[in-house]
Image 1 (cartoon, each protein chain N blue to C red):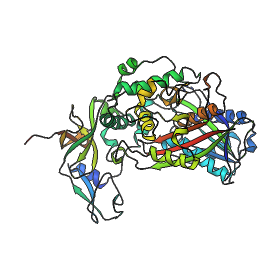
Image 2 (cartoon, rainbow over the protein chains, first blue to last red):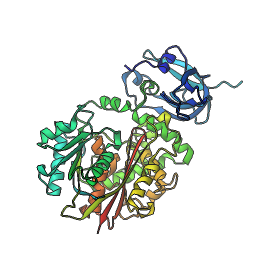
Image 3 (cartoon, rainbow over the protein chains, first blue to last red):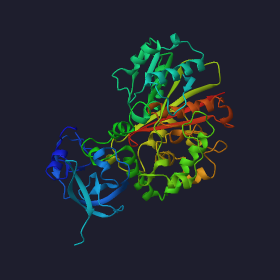
Image 4 (spheres, each protein chain N blue to C red):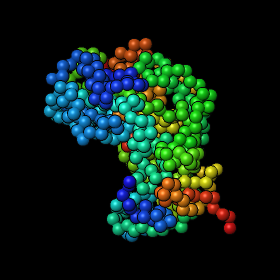
Length: 122
Length: 380
């Protein structure tokens, strides 16, 4: 089992989190010890609004574990959040690159995850 | 600075070697390399090993040294995913050029196919993804590469049929090598009709899992045969995880290759032989195009034109690459270098190309995360 981090604790609380540099304000992809822009180590975890655009999408037909085998085919996406960071998550079937999406909490085998659905048109 | 001479190679057939351990396979390739170079064990003073997912030992190099009856003055192993083999050769070159070692044995091997359940192999490899943000999504190496491929196709106009062309090319080359795992003829239609793995990648876009081993000997002194030297090397490491890759058009491959060419004092146009990592068809397309051996989206057109064939301007992976010779981990990436050295030395027999003077070897580890380029030359 992977160690808990602020990101995974966020998921468990139904939140999608990312890091923001407290020195230069840059929003960061991934889990960092230092800012990729200014090298400051003053980073804070923030809640994302959950909206963004699809950067990449794949329909997975061969799952790596038993829990995901029950789900195939499932859609994985990389989404560029409106705040800037890129995240990997599940996606609604049929998403295409560039499509506007919004995050929803989901679970697979008790593992909290994020699924992006098409963003409702307002 | 002294030269780093490649004086011997060993490569087992890839496929199923039932009952052979990682160390057994490593020993076979290492013995072949010693025999090829005409060396005795005692003449090896440096040993560099990779890793084996079926044998996660803390000290693989000394474990192998004991079993193979070596007592080197310098030994350790290294882990850099698919780029390990090329990185080991780069280090071996530095060790002999600095005078630290006289003759370095670089060896890797693994019973990745027969030594574990396929699911274990896939789960182990999936861990190159981020443990909190990627792997829990049901990610796998094919899924990571598929996501990357979706974006690359979107940005460059590359089609699934274009990617298929590269699988067909590797299969055609494998047909000429008796050690290749997959040798039955393959067409673009076959690739497109193969089982979906993770769109846009299908089974025939993915390399097989293999047992096998490879070894090379790097020496401060030339051997008795044709002289093949490692003249330049370069690396680039821009990210570990797919999420953190800024752009699919700049993964680091181009930077690593430019560093290697600069050290070798060569221009890209002078390269006349290619040994490029091809874990998936998308890997090969992205590496060829970022380094500059084809225009963006243009790899398939060059393959169709015959440019990457044995009679073409840039013969590519004439052993069949990972896609068809097979992939047993570190040794899978070393097989490209073995074939390039064999071709440069003019010792490839029926596969020998008319001219091979300047070869570029490139490997990536992770999800296009670690990049290592080598420039190999035939002297004289």
